[in-house]
Image (cartoon, rainbow, N blue to C red; front, side):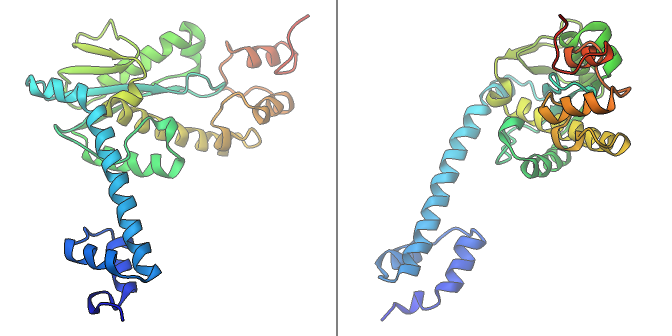
Length: 270
């Protein structure tokens, strides 16, 4: 006979697996002693969640180390800055700057490239809600063509910092330096995976730019912008050859330049 405490496994599963409540020690002991497969499954699920939480806690401590060092020194307004959209053939480069509260530890915040669309959108909403301040900056296709993509990325990041409603005390930037911004800065290689503030900026920027490309897809159907977000993929090359260049394409980029010259998007001049 099963212990009375565990007579309703469905209730325990709902409470401690589905709802994720902490498992009391006495119930954990009873589950461990219960021979039923359902009891073992509940306990295994709880133990897997604990391990996952432990790993996530360790990861969050690691990606908070730059912020924690600044906060300990009394630097409270730390802004993470990152840009997205350097490689696409169409649309602006978009950057975000995000100032998180001291000690902020939102689960799941990571390099936007490691997250699926639903996770990015959910986290972007949470980050915009919780942030002390956040700002968006853009460099438009014509600016990209005029000053080149590298400098356009810097321009978008500077504009994102300028869009903040409060002035940050320090910037954490993904692999770049904003020489024309008079704020102390730290460059962090692979910063979107090493700093929670930069990761937050990468998520906010990515979600913002993706929404712009969905809107552009409605304006210019047939290119697949909503699907590939303007990146140089086979579908985009084929659409350029079939439909031509839109006003939002980056004319300095090779495939676009080739189509404007009467070649196919992938064809090299002889």
